[in-house]
Amino acid sequence: MEEEIRWPAEWEVHERCWVGWPERADVWPNGGKEAKQAMVEVAKAIANEGLEHVTLIASPRSVGEAAGAVRAAGLDGVVRVSALELDDIWLRDTGPIVVRRTAGGATSLLGLDFAFNGWGGKFPPWTKDAEAAAGILELEGLAREDCRDFVLEGGSVHGDGVGTVLATETCLLNENRNPGLGRDGVERELRRRLGARKVVWLPRGIVWDGDTDGHVDNFACFAGPGRVLLSWCECGEGPGVCAQCSSCEEAEAVLERETDADGHVFHVTRVPLPEIQRYTEGEAAAIEGGSRAPGEPLCCSYLNFYVSNAAVVMPGFGCPRSDARAREVVERAFSPGRKVVQLGVGRTLALGGGNIHCLTMQKPEL
Image (cartoon, rainbow, N blue to C red; front, side):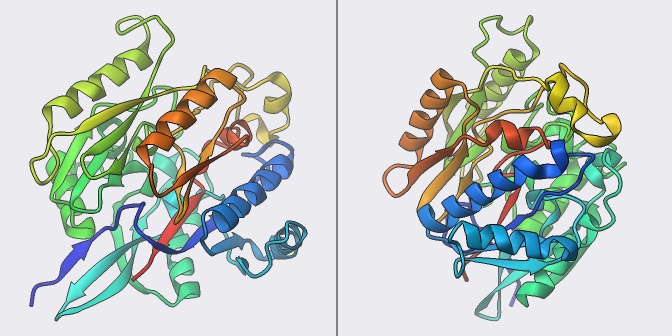
């Protein structure tokens, strides 16, 4: 009997969530002090509000610190601390993508271990992160499929659970990922590995997301079959003047003319972007090695949220108007069934180059 692969949607039931412990001094201000506090907040929300078990993965030298933070937050029993060498915390991109494999009438979970090259070679070293997926699968006792002939980050794709995948051309078709493979080759790999039946290509994502070349999880995501949330720039300058306004309108035009894998039209809901935020002089100076410059824009998006079993855990950026409006839109999109928990950790996490969705990876329930 032929094998069938299905990549579950993020709103399907999870057995567990994996998150990482920040400590890289050339990425995080102050060696990750504030980021660690934010991580505990995220883990607590996923565990207590999201009704989900959490595994916090820390390097061997930091396991004691991480375990102490878990105890102090009253999370013993729901947050498990495990030791594994990592370069950074972005398990959405470095951890395994877990799919359901059905063969011979039996269904099992399968962890896909894709190649990771530091988002196109931007952030060395990444040798430990390149082994993260295999290490997590070993910790969990999950079957592993070697997919290291193909570079893929989890944040570069978003699926509806029934065969439709969203991606951006600027990321997945970038020559710094899979040179020479081209659109047809990338689609072939997504069909083979993730069970994709249709890939919908958005031209680009958040234009100041240079770290990832425009990951789709910052820009557009499914809230259900046929329902897409799309980040929307409200700066007032409009397309032709503002590059982000142009990117948003290009994406909306694609989604309006495309259909999902079953031929259904998309229902698109705009989610406002927060006002542009930038590294301050103090924040840039607090990162070792001068990897960030004062005035450099942060990549901030409300869609960088985690859909847990009972809640959507989403970032807030200290922008009262857009924080509240984005929360309202997300609440409507996932209601009934899930409440929205908005944490004021968005800027802290964005300083390290990602946000809540980036630092989480779910293990679906069998």
